[in-house]
Image (tube, rainbow, N blue to C red; front, side, top):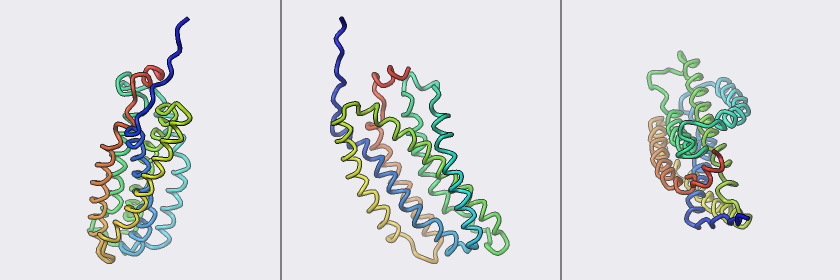
Length: 223
């Protein structure tokens, strides 16, 4: 009878690498919630009605896109046999998520809130929906890889604890950093803040790779 092998223990550094995803989520989501409505209504001058409508439609899309993306990314791709089921989507989603955050604050200066309010509305709606789409593409696969990556109960508890600890830094930096960059009344400073967030986000994505990269046993189980 063939002996059943126990899964190999995961290194703490790999758990810490995975935990960078928690930093990424708290970092971007915190800044998104604090800045978007204020930017469009106070700085750009979009009416409260248009801003509220964009947020409502965004919320509806938010409820729809998670199961949709989960369904679409569950199918095998040409890269599945080599890179795994989740890793390509995690990498692609996280990079595009960072760029979509930047896009939110890249409203063309030529648009006037008095004469071009409908165009600004669609820019806001489109950019925040893209932000949510790429967040879902990343987050659905990031969360789904956890039970397959950490197969032992103790490992899962340890990895979750490390991720929570790292996530605290994401909350702190995501909250404090905009205040050091943004000058209220200067819309270009919001875009600069977006570039800074994108740069930090891409660095964190690189740190995240070892923690979400699928091992050969993981790929074999899926295939």
